[in-house]
Length: 332
Image (tube, rainbow, N blue to C red):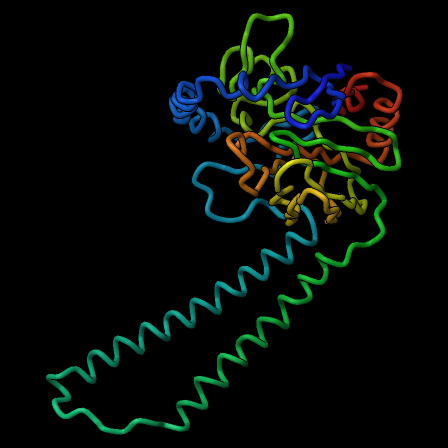
């Protein structure tokens, strides 16, 4: 475990991997870095088309796919409710759009100058005015009847079986298992802070042979670059997880699409979200609030495991000086 001072916040930070460099070194030669990233985009797209592989019996489930048009597979009740609500709203707005377009086409054809050289002179039509006032109200009440229960279910935080405090930093996440005495920082694999100390190599958020080796060592494929992290949140399947979300510097946002959760991390405020993952596997997310130059490099990785594996992982990390990967528990 390495303890280092943060040059931007002045706080001491305990890192499972080498702590990050200063901001000046971290963003040196940004133009060259972006060129490297764009040059790899085609290659990454090709690898991303390969089906997700299991990581020691943990399947990668919550992950974006090339050309995807819909949602990620729902892994919680919250996500299913949100996706059902989205499908309902899509039907409603489609009907409204078709009706409005059809009405416009009919008016253009029926009441153009050629067919109707003498326009009518009336200014009011009471039945129509009542209809276009009442019908939208009915539609909104109908939508509210379905959307408000979903919203309340999200915002009413139940008592959690596991409580985790997550803090957003520029540009990584810090996690603290409130009742377990376990805490660690989480960086994207390929971030400067994850560069090995025993190699003469610099990480600059771009793929290279060293990053590929680190991805493989962590159990990820190259298609998970920009999503995989050096440490991951581990939670038990079928348990209520409460995340206490805050920020240390600017506003961040903790988001896992497959769980249907998103909460802004605001400095000075402690917000909460909850979820109950129903399937073991690996789920990815991203910081979803623009937070600075490296905003795109703040991924989130959550591994959902059995309750026994979770308890063993907690014990291993409580007694260890360095972060213990849950794969060590799953393979024992």
